[in-house]
Length: 87
Image 1 (cartoon, rainbow, N blue to C red):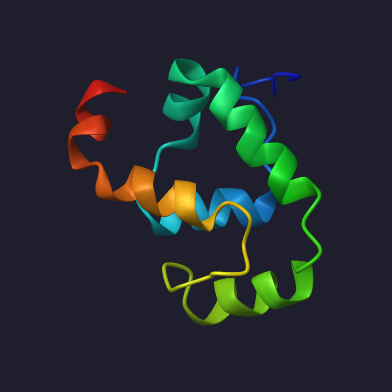
Image 2: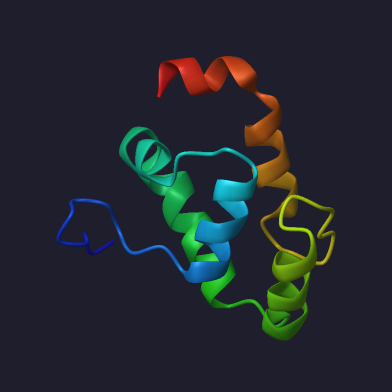
């Protein structure tokens, strides 16, 4: 995973927008769970629903996206309120 000049790994725009909508700190997750973050990035980069994702992110970025390969994990992370205090 190549770091961005800011020290945070590159995050595909749809993933960054979805994580922000769910109040997830991408940089904190990348630091604390680099393997999981890499999996999130890779799944997003390989997704075949880019147009649908872009449309949904425009309309309701925190809404359900069951077609998204990261949907389950991102929702799990957003529901783990205690996790945010540890990151």
